[in-house]
Length: 125
Image (cartoon, rainbow, N blue to C red; front, side, top):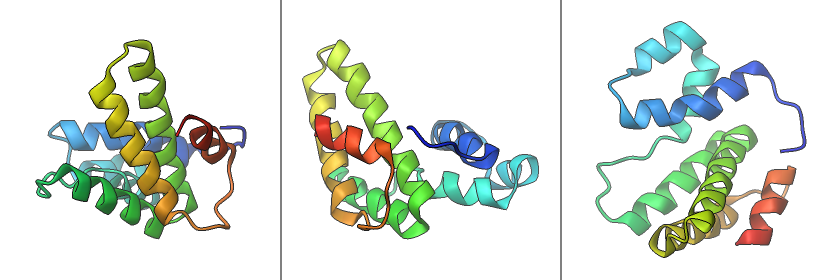
């Protein structure tokens, strides 16, 4: 990402994974990092109650896009990071998953959401 983001954005970029995979609670994130960070984190946390992987991917991208530009940038940055990792490890099933995520991101991305991460993701998509 070429642009400079505030500290709340950067915190959210890393915290959504913690909310997804640990016992961390919404209230803890809100108390320690604030409401803005919590909303960005929640916009990027997978809804594991959606059993169908393709539907979960679409719902997550749509929710991030609806939450706004910063939330979708986090979604795109995470997908781009995964692309890079799974390309290095030649993990084809996970690369397919990344392609599905990228497709969903661009399906729901507003035309006025601009950032270098979208251009970089488009190149690997």
